[in-house]
Length: 285
Image 1 (cartoon, rainbow, N blue to C red):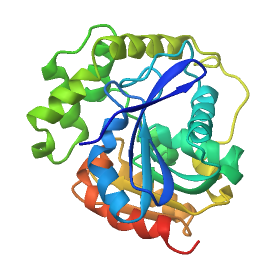
Image 2 (image 1 turned 30 degrees about the vertical axis):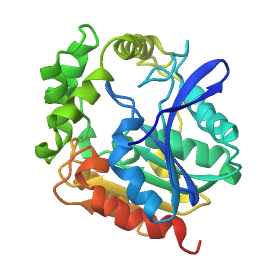
Image 3 (image 1 turned 180 degrees about the vertical axis):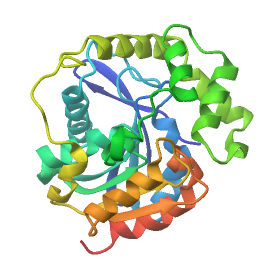
């Protein structure tokens, strides 16, 4: 049974889950409603058994961590480094799921001396768009459900529908898993989700132009540390086609497609993730 441990950062209580004593790796969860360190519960043990010191934490406003008054990308990148500092880690690998992939890559680009390896799990925004802009998730049933839930706290059936939309293997949604995910989707977690949704709508540059920036997927080749990427072949937004396009543009990338896998790569493709990640993290650089 994994024990919740809390560290204090800038006056906020940050909840962590830890297992193992080997090569340090920080696991970063995504930004959707219900996300938390718990998404990695089934992964921490196998990683630890392979020689990895696996540490997942709840970003402020998620899971059991305190809520922060801000949630910008720079805040999240800074929180990763502050968690490492609090744990006495000068350098660690970053394992990032979903939208956290942008944070992981951003930290690795900005502070390469702090990051030993990067593993990306299902981050669609790190894939190039298809011709005509295809591959976006707007208009999907999941996007519509999440939009409704930004106004109305989800029922447990809403939580189940979201999990089913993100999972190929629905049998993984046990009663305990559903209850845990739902507990991370209501109450203060839901309040923080609503605040994040509103903040995105009013963020500078949201539909108002602004200085163009180079997409992160175009900067992957600039990373100074080893990179491993795993995507679900059945993930949303035509991820398989876009991953193939990324590989075509950057043939040197260590990119793998997981069969029978949607967006929750740490669940659907847990065995493949462990099989690839352990030697990647513990082998010769």
